[in-house]
Image (tube, rainbow over all chains, first blue to last red; front, side, top):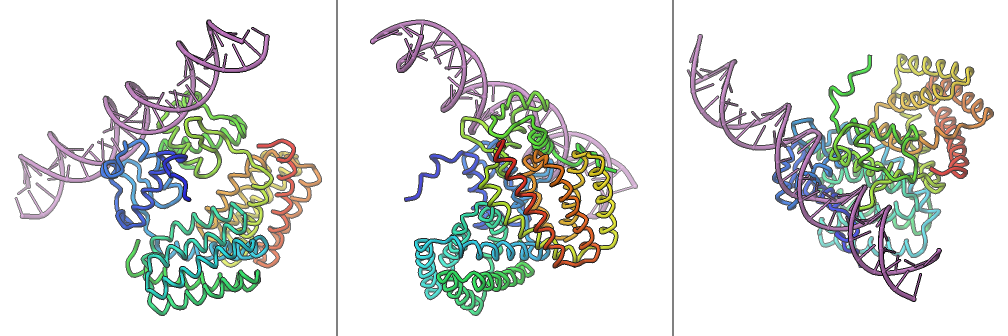
Length: 221
Length: 221
DNA sequence: TAGCATAAAAATGAATTCATTTTTATGCTA
DNA sequence: TAGCATAAAAATGAATTCATTTTTATGCTA
């Protein structure tokens, strides 16, 4: 099903992906220096492709490059969330609108299927799988807009708060609430009711952001 | 006034900027291959920092990297504009809203001053200066939101259509119209009338996009 | 002479090397 | 022994080198 990753993509792109994973998996922690030598050994590459990847990650604002002093994983501050939230809100609202216009029945079925899997993971308390499916559902809604720009910007921002969002191992209460919101999202999308969809997406995002923010205020990333 | 560019910034970042300029100034043309050796000589650098810069530019979607076959300057297609337009619209609308809430009197004066300079350039038919000031005004509105995310995403998208927009050496009619729209923008902003501002920004952008689109359909970038 | 196969040249990808800067370690002085 | 100066080690920045791939040139065959 999935394409062989190493086939079409370049070494450098793989490195970008690998470092993203290292950050997400918590091997590289916010604020921490990224030691080139160590990462090179871990990925069995030389410094050249690593440094190329670091430049790209810096332009994505996942890390910061301090001249002569190495790269550091960025931490999200409250202000970052406050800035990102309204922008993501605007993107989600637009996406909801466009998706309702453009989505095909097959795509709705696809999302429904992801939704049910996710629902099962919620029941089983499998947060990791839930999280993964959650991301995929939102990405699928974005993809349904057929608008590459919105997909790209959304995933750029989503990538930045992904770590914090994952760590936001929120309370059972919030989790239940999020699941309920997703029921409504699926319902509105199935009916292609864009005004309702955008409203729910907005609420959903707002709540998520609050959760994320409360989490990063405790620990910081 | 301006900081010494070579002081704080790194070589690699300068190279990114230089290549952006080469693209914008038309030395590197859409669809054209970017010959590493030539650019290295022109910028008096080795291939390493150049290649780092190319990776960054690719992640910004200004160029495309074809494995083993070099880098090419991206051309905008009609579909790209169609995708970018609603997203920029959503960003501008949000920016108008936020700017009206956040902007200081000093910032309004600053924008007014830019506006009058631009108006003079319009009268004199100095398109280059007009264009430059136009960009600065829009960036200043974005900056007034105090929202770094919106500034960043806006400038990312603005950077992509910059070439086409510049080439859109639109008709005198459209230019006059654009200038008139800017009068309204300044007025709404001065009064912090966000609903009017967002409306005008939207119209203004829509017109700009139409112009850009009609231009890229003739020549392509 | 058109089209193909092969060889040579050029370009790219990535490792290595070297210069420079930063960090850490060592020892000296008050 | 605290604080500073100096030396050594480590890390970073960027050029160079080498391997591989692509492109171009050459010559051969039908």
